[in-house]
Length: 201
Image (cartoon, helix red, strand yellow):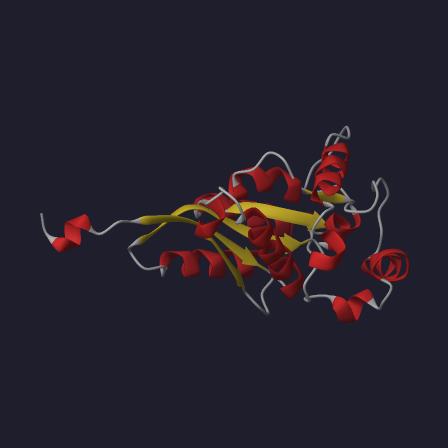
């Protein structure tokens, strides 16, 4: 048997993030779930795709995935992004391009900070980005959250994943919940078991 045919193919999960906050968050989860006997997380690769939004972000993620070395077989690929000012038409196009490229969408509205807030409390009403920053700054992070974004979350969120998942389930189980139109919305919690191979958070 040739050396080339014996070469092992490593299956990996790739997570392409719109911003540094998302990347820092998933890096925290990778550190948390890589301890002990769980080896699933050794196969998680997290990257930021800067200065891209919407369909452009999806297409760049698809190109990055296609350029991975041949010995890296992508088991699943995710793109993490916010609604911000994307329209329903924009989001429909994102969904279409993601399906065409076998990418899964992790999405939050109005932004990723809705998911961060769920680590502390249930969310049932819409917030603006400014309101979320103010709420997280004053009540939970004790500093200007807008300046904190992109730093390590461990001190604040490491032991709160279970609460966030429970609150996330409560949010997504609401009648009429639809990522294209709902605000607030997040589906981060729905991807965690597939990514990290855990059911206890």
